[in-house]
Amino acid sequence: MIRSSRFVSQVVLVGNERKFPAALIVPNFEMLASYAELKGLDLKTPAELCKSERIHDLLERQVAEATEGLSQFERVKKIALLERELTVESGELTPTLKVKRRVVDENYRDVIDSLYSQKDQ
Image (cartoon, rainbow, N blue to C red):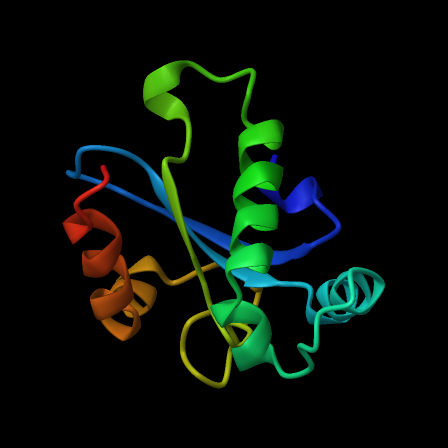
């Protein structure tokens, strides 16, 4: 559902044994750069796009819209934007492009933990 957004390239849901579902999102940087230019934002690099509050807000709205038909407990409550694609070379994807959850959990443990440690849950 979330990947149906033109602004999302890859998404990994996390939250197993946690209070709520969250998502790690690799944005479609080309689409976001076009959006930023259209809105007059001076954001060019993936790092700048991922750190922008406006971009984060846009993707939160996209996720909320895509998952509005789900039950409350199934909806993604928080998202984190990743600055690079998940790849086979990095060990995060299998040769058939399936996500290796254990590797993603290890590589992005700090990011995932920060999603669940924020006060505004």
